Length: 390
Image (cartoon, rainbow, N blue to C red; front, side, top):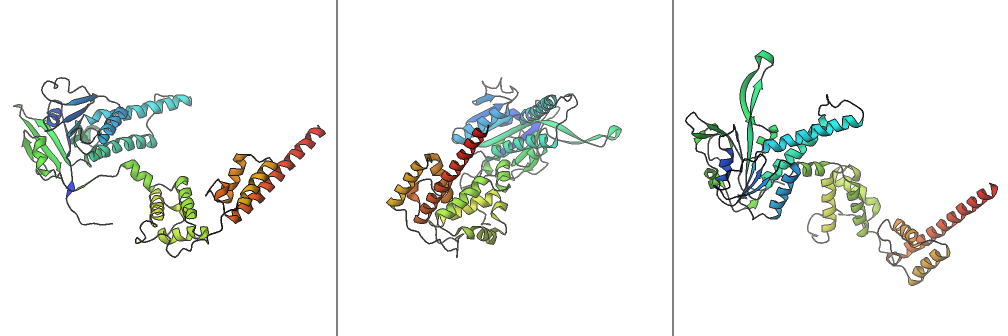
C-alpha cells in the first residue's frame, strides 16, 4: 500500500495557451533535444528552416493516438513532443459526436436540425479526450501541449462579465500537466508567460516571466529514480467495473487445476473480499487469480487458499477405460465433437481429452455417452412415428 516517497524519474509536461501570436509554438520548438510535433493547424509551416523537428499534420483523434503509440514503442526516439494545439483535437471529438447524433436521429426518422448531444455522447467525448491527456502525461519524453485562449464569463444577459480566461478545451486539461502558462505580448512586442500552475517550483504562481522558455524548467527534471505513471481513465474504469465472465471462468479453472475443493471457492472469496465471486471488480478478480497462480511459486506470501483442503488425488484412467470410451462412442454414433463436449462437461472444463480423466470421471463419461445415445435414438424413433402418421 503506502511506501516511503523517493526520487521519481520525471519528464516535463507543460501546457501553454494564449491568443494568436503570443509564442505558444515557439515555446515548444525552442526546447532542447530531438523534437516531434503533432501539428493540428499547419502552424509549423514556416518553422522548418529555423528549427529541427519531425512533424505529423492531422486533426484526427485516431491519428494522434497512432502517433502516441509510435512514441511509446520508440521511447528514445524523441526528447520532446509538441501537440499544437490540443484545442483542435477536442473540437474534432465534439464535431464527431454531433455528427453521430444527427445520423442517429435520421436513422429513426427524427429531425437532425435540433439534435443536441446526450449525456452519454458527452461521456464518450470526455473519456476519449481525458484518456488522451493522460497518455500524453505518461509519455517517457517531455511534452508541450499548446491551446487556444478561451474567455470565461459569469452572469447572464446584460449582467454577463468577463472574469478570466482558460485553455480552450475540456476543463480537466489543466489538472494533469505539471506546469500551466498563459502567454502574453505587451504593446511593445515583449513576450511574457504568466504562471498559473508550477509543480516544479521553478516560478511562483501568478508570476509574470519575460521571455519565458521551456528550458527554464529543465532544472527540475530528475533522470533517476522509479518511473511515475498515471493510470489511464479507461484502464481505471475497466479495473473498477464488475468482473468479466472470462475472469470468473479463469478463476474456477485454476481452482480446479490445483485440485482444491470446488465448494470452498465462494466462501474463501467472501472471507477475503466480503463479497461473492460475481460481485468482485475486474481488478479484484485479476488480483485473486494472480495470487492463486503465484502461490505455488511464492509460498511465503499470504496464500489465498490458506486452510483450504485439496481434493484427494484420484487414480488416472486405465487403458481399458480409454478403449471403452472410444468403442462406445463408435457403437452409439457419437462423433468426436460430442465426445469431447461430454468429457469437458464431466471434468468441469479441465480437459477435453479422455486420457486426462480420472477413473471416476471416465465412468461418468461412459454413462453420459450411453444416455446421450438413448436420447438420440428416442428422438429418431419419435420422428419416424410422426412421419408415418402424416
